[in-house]
Length: 85
Image (cartoon, rainbow, N blue to C red; front, side, top):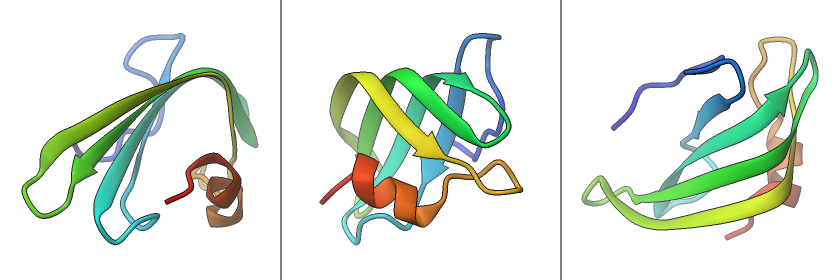
């Protein structure tokens, strides 16, 4: 499984691995724009089956939103509005 990346692989994208939003899936969000306390814009959401560590599904959003905490990690309450299982 990909390790947590805070910051972008390129200047226009930010990648977050979310392990605790589902009992069955790990989630990797690649989102277009982040500042100090939020991320928003176009996003790709990859779901990985925890049991076999294989990609299950990819979702796309034109207007995804995440609030970030002081450590620049997504707030769990923000995730409840963005990723729902």
